[in-house]
Image 1 (tube, rainbow, N blue to C red):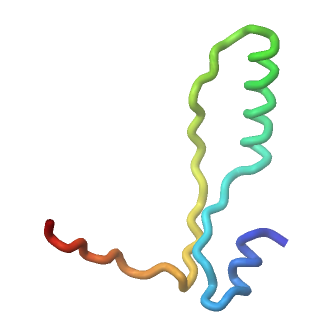
Image 2: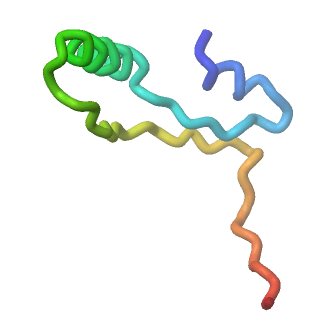
Image 3: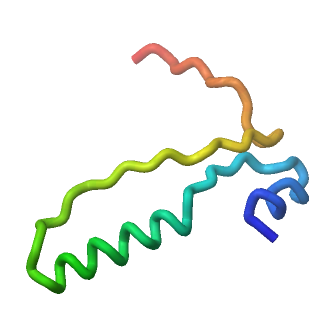
Length: 66
């Protein structure tokens, strides 16, 4: 059961963000192995996730003037 499935069972259904877990694990291991070999310095890696909007998300509130 995924966290998205579990979030849907909550009341109200929660909004969740999913990430490509297997890909992130592979990238992390490859980066670790390069570091252990003394090859490349660490570089930031950005990957996209997906937003699963549930009923726990509402409209953006307007901020009060300062």
